[in-house]
Length: 295
Image (cartoon, rainbow, N blue to C red; front, side, top):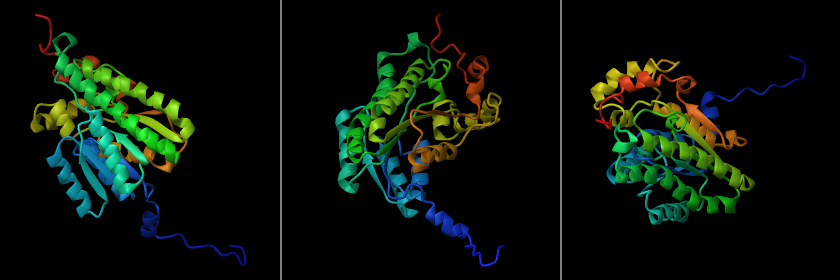
């Protein structure tokens, strides 16, 4: 060390963590916040300093998540919202603004899918349910959030699509269609509103463990546990992902650390889309069964 040179001691890790709240003062809406990736992302956002508004149609589970966040010291609000009803989405945005005065982040996360069936075996009601929730719900949220982000000349929108928007998962035509459309919609939003300093990015998770996988991929928690090894065989990293791994990417996209990232599609799939074994997937997940096949 040169004579007379003073080198400041680095801050402690505790001090660094206190300073590194990258979402401090940001207000974020998370749809589908009552479970799964939505709930996990809400906890991650709150730990990083954000105020979170949980939107979900399931009021009981939503209130339970709200209580857990508040018990941990986070600032949050739950608003029951049916995303397929535009008036309810508009109310969600208005109540958020009335309570907190701004909207910095929209994580359009809520999504549903049918049971396994080919196109000829899906009812119009089932098709509409998936497209209305996944695609129209995202559209409604963006439609009513964007004007406020334009006024404040800033905002980050993250759309939760799926690897199903990149490749065709067996016997899931409605889900595949909705997720592919979400990807293109997000890119359109990024192109149209970049001039207002509004960024829009889309994530495409692969197989993520937890309640969603149990509900939509496997038939029971026991089958889900057994099926993890089969899923891992299709993925270069050799395992299913976790909601935390998704939430950390969303937090990055919501933060100023990604200030020059817009219109991006980020796969969170352990390398699955590098070359998925569609036939093997059909066998492991029962998609090659007689559900929806021609007699």
